[in-house]
Image 1 (cartoon, rainbow, N blue to C red):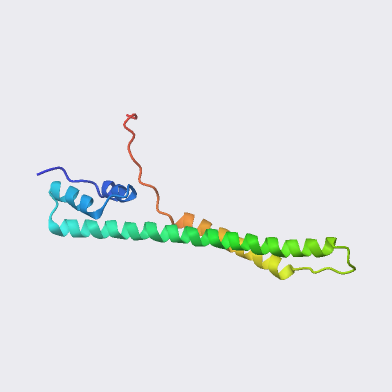
Image 2 (cartoon, helix red, strand yellow):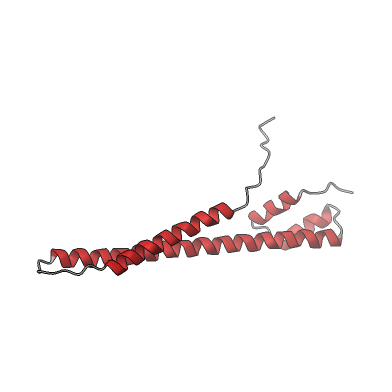
Length: 130
């Protein structure tokens, strides 16, 4: 019987974009039973779903920040343009400015929340340390 592989090593394979068939073959070659392979593959699948979910959350947060910046810029631009145009009155586009700032704050808060929910990274032993 061959040496059993640590579950963290298998999860590390998922981060290296290994295919399920490669992981399954590695497990079979190392003497895991079918039941153990099913359980491990379930963990691998959950890890893949978590990674995909985090990537989507990061994209959504960035979109909120960018849309907020755009809305703020438009509101600020309209306000400055009408103020500098020399007329006796100007448009204060406070709705766009406040909404833009709120969207940027919400996007930043989502990013911080996502970072705090991220599980700790797997610590690898350095071959150079004793």
